[in-house]
Length: 198
Image 1 (spheres, rainbow, N blue to C red):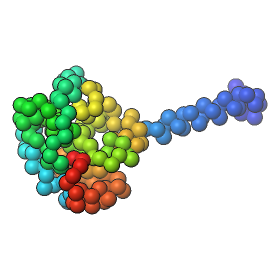
Image 2: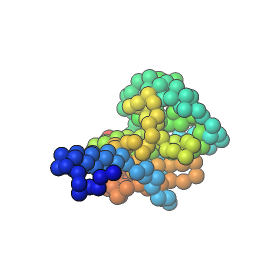
Image 3: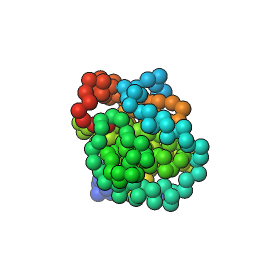
Image 4: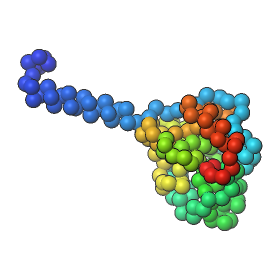
């Protein structure tokens, strides 16, 4: 095997480009941000429907086939912006067959009945002015993004780009979490405004 010094200039250039490409691919995917436990979040007063659904969840055995079937069903629910911050109950969303991202995420959570799920409030795109809601699910040691507002299939959370699906706050059955350094700015905005977003 040749050592690096004996390679031709063309081969060295190719290897350098391949290394750059690999580095770009690795940096394009985000490390899954699971946040840090928080004693309170600016959305707590709006999340009683989320807490009610968490209180009904006692399982953790949904198959990926079932998850993706529910994602397709949730995607078919018509998107309509509803009340800011407070999600409709899953029963309301199912009856009306419309809702916004937080309504659809909560509907999906109620259908999954999986205690390894988190209800997430964040940014679909890091530069977006509006907040977005989706679910994160831990299954078989891997975290998945479940966003039936935008997609019909779960995607591995570590495959989302660093500027996609940026969580700010998330909620599990037993805790609330604060994510990223932008969470403080969003908390300020959420407490001052009820015009747009989740």
